[in-house]
Image (cartoon, rainbow, N blue to C red; front, side, top):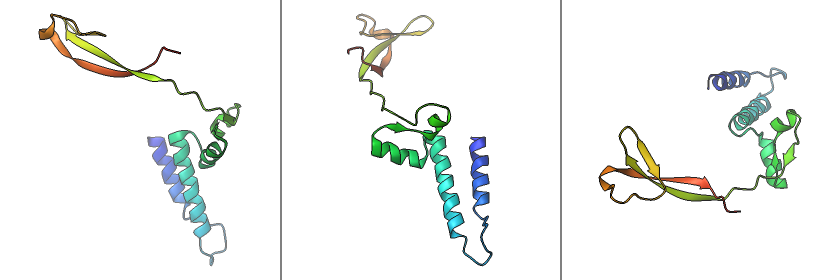
Length: 125
């Protein structure tokens, strides 16, 4: 988080810089710095630039400048989503800990601690 704030402060500090003549408005520089800041936020959060998001949307693939800069392909096919199922665990208090089972235990109602529902990958292909 500290590096992000330092980077953001540096970008915001550069927003006032203008390399053009002193009598012209600095709007292009402010707009350029704003786009650069948005691009930086996008890279930090999604590991893709704004242009990468646009190219990914148009091509239907996963495109990333960061991945390409490391020597990999710029665009790859989207990964196939893994089907998920819900699994319920029934947990009971034991002497020193809580143990969970995939079925409720009969006759142990006094030791019942609670239920837990998890999303797990389906093993059925």
